[in-house]
Structure formats: C-alpha cells, structure tokens
Image 1 (cartoon, helix red, strand yellow):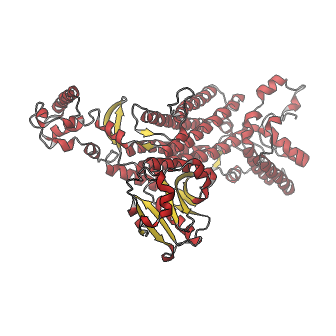
Image 2 (cartoon, helix red, strand yellow):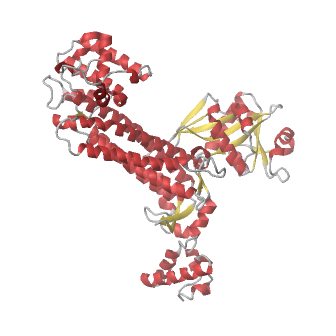
Image 3 (spheres, one colour):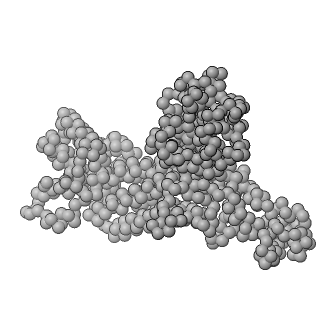
Length: 628
C-alpha cells in the first residue's frame, strides 16, 4: 500500500529501509486503541464541520466492524504491508467506505495519534497488572493467616538472626506489593491525559473541543502543551520503573523461597506444578518457576535502561527514536504480569514444614538478645549484658548445646544474677511474641496487620461447583497430600478420573483449593469421602461448604442416609452428623479397608446423616459466594 506521506517523494523507499522503518510488526498490538481513538476523533471533526453526521456514522460503524474483526483474530498482520498500525487502520477503512475514509486524518498527526494509542494501551494494561497485584496480595494474606502459628529464623547477612513468624515474612512482601500498587495507581493518574488534537507539534487549526474529546476516551483531561504532549514518554518510563521495582520485589521473594525450599533449609515444600526435574538426576526437584521469575527481572531492567538512554538526548518535539518506546514496554509489562501469575501459583503450592522451621528457629542462638535483655532487666548495663551473653553463647557453642539447654549453674558462671526465671525468657514463642509492638512479629500485631489488609483488599470470590476433568490435577494433589498424612484413603489417578462426577470442588480466584466426593453404594447408602482443603485455605469454612453442597446433591437424588468415616468427628457433628456403627457398613469395609494403612488398628469413627430429618437448600449448578 502507498505510504501516508508519499506525495513529496519522487521514488519509493528501498526494501531495506522499509523493513528497518516499519513498526507494524510490533505496534499492531495497538490496533484496538487506534480504532478507539479514531472513533473519538471522527466525532470531534464531525462537530468541527469536517464530516457530516451520515459520514461520521458510516465511518464509526466501519471502525467498529474492524475492531470486531481484530478481536476475533481474523486479521493476519504478518501479511500486511502497511508502515504502521495507523496506516493499516486507515487503509482498511478506505477499502470499506472509500474516499470518505481519507477525511479521518484531517487535523490529526501520527505524532498525537501514537501517543494517544500508547496511553490508552498503557492504561488498560495498568489495570490488568493492578488486578493481578491485588490477587497476589490476597493469596499472600491467606498464606499468612493460615500459617501464623509457625515460626522460622529471620536472617540478616544470610545468617540466622532472630526468630519471626512465617506470617510476618509473608506480610513483608504484602507491604512491597502494596507499594507496587500505589506506584502504579499514581502513574495511571499522570498518564491519563489526552494528547489528541495536539497535531504534529503545534496543535490543530480545526475547532476541536479537546476537553470533550479527552473525556469521550476516558481521559481525565487534555495535555496542556502540544510540544510536550507529542514528545512525552514519562508515562512509559514510569511504567517501566514500576515494572522494574515490582520485578525486584518478586525476585527477592523468589530468592527467599528458593533458599527456604533447599535441602539445607527445608522450611517449605513447593508443589509439583511449579517445579521440574533433572534429565540426569532422578532425585532432583528444581524450583524453576522461581528461578525464571528471578531471571526475567534483568530483562525488565534492560527495557527501562534502554528507554532512558534513548530519550536523554532528544530535542523537542517528536523524533523517530521514540518508535523504540514500544517493544520494551510491551515486553516488560507482559513479563511482569506473567511473573505475578506464576507467583500466585507458587504461593498456592507452598506447604510449610513446621517442624524444620521450628528446629532452625531454635538453632543459631537467636535467643541471645533475650538473655542480654533479661540481664538489663536485672540492672546490668546493656553493653555489659552484651559481653556476658556473648561469653555464654561461646560456651554453649563449645558444649554443642543451645542456650536454653544450659544448666543454671552453668549460666551462673557468667552472671550470678541469672536465676531459674531465665528459662521462659529463652523459649521460642516468648522471643517472638515479646515483639508485640506495632509492626513487630508478635502474634497480636501480626494478626492486626492481616485483618487490616483483608479489609483494605476486600474479599475473594469463591465458587462451590461440580468437578470437571480439567480439575483432575488439583484433585489428585489434594487427595495425595491428605492420604500421605493418613487423613484420607489413597486413590489412584485412573480411579479419580473414573469417579470425577462424584466430586465437587471449591474454586477461589480460578484456583481449585478444596475437593470432596459423594460415593453411592449399590445399597443406596452414600459416603462423603476424599475431603481435603489446601493447607493455605484452611479455616475459612470450605470443608463445611463442600459437605453442605454434597448433602444437597444427595437430597436431590432422594438418598436417605449419608455417612462418613473420620478421625475428626467434631467437624461433622457441627454439620448434624450423629455417631453411627461401623459394623453396619459391611460394603464400605469390604471395599476400602484393604487400602487403609491402619486396617488392623482402625481409629476412625462412623457418623451418619439422615437426610429425611433435615431441610437442605436445593443445589442449582454452582454456588458463587463472596468471602466475609
């Protein structure tokens, strides 16, 4: 197709220059934004007398049809010969409505057009990233809330320092992500100004109402200087800086978890869905998701540095160098978003090894500061107390004992002021909960911060629904996890595939976090089994919700009784199950007892639910709930 600027030239561009100059191979991403801006401009020039009402309406409909074509994927941009997305949209419009389309560019330049398109795209992508940041925050809050009783070592210089609650660690990253959210929201306000109507650099001679035009495109108002408007890329830099800072936070998060997951620390176990194996060493389980997040951080940094260097020497106003603003921005926000999605997947896969955490927290003499503070409480100057404690730690190291294991007579070698009341001071929970100040790692401030952030970030929607085959991976993981802890019977994957219709699941923000099955025996008796809730989503009533859902299903099927075999009868008694007799369940015993590792020493209790005695709500497809 002919270039938009060819009239002044005697000959066309060489193929080499055209390939070097054209931006359609990457700025096609802005197709919807260019169409949206063009519709807004068509309305503005219609009011300015350039188009008739009929011409504008015809043009708008053709642009809307083109937008639908792009949205449906019916356009192959790789086959197009246009210089850029603006040329492509105009050429497509000319093909549909003819010469009327040539009026669209009246009073407009590609300089204000591309800046408008890029601001519209940036605004939309900012909202997408903001939503994902908030989802990541919600999942970290859930992880913190469900693991606030667990304690692990805190580190400085990668040396064990003082113990902290795992929830306190989680909430540290919540604070970082909250700053990322604030930074993006702030950048969004500044980018939301419209350059359209500023022309190439000096404005337009047509009587365009730029305030109305800006508002019609969702901008807060127009840019106030035409020179600045067409050459400003501060909003791109701000997004790249926000992405770089956000990726730095995710990289630190990844580094912590890589260490926590290592054999040397063994504080957490990462799920199979976010790890991979070795082609040579069958024992390996590598934290590849986290390593890739850490690795992509440098890629995003590069985009920021590249644009800073590009812009630093540019005179006003527009220069072709600015074409280099897009690919780095597109890639940086794509990488940031994909890393946030993966971070949520990682958070939902974490299982805490609480015994290893506590063992490590007790090691490293993390209670040395408490001994020094104890001596200060006895009237010893802190610097003297520090020296005494250091000597006691050295002695304990030589004895191969933790401080709290030293006898009282051993303590008294270092200070006669040390009495038996020192031992409670050296306990792990005391060390942590003594930091009860705002922002500390004590249980009270940690819980307050969790509750405060829950209020700030609202609630997560969850759905109780019948299982689908695409839920199989999540169901297998849940069943295997709880059977490994002897809470459920093990189930083979092919058995779970065959019985997928028996299952119901709870889905939170697109993630299956709980499952249970209603199995019906040939006698018409039914059992709720394979009930499991992800360790990071416990304490929210999901287990009860699933049981109520399956009881409702049983009621619809006109079943009379549902039973469970459990080691946690109190849970089911709250749902009105009553104690029953295992001997009255021969079919169940014959079918499943051979699978049970405790078949010769069964400690499960049978409980029954009589459906005829209860009124249950009818189950219609699925139940969508907002958590309170």
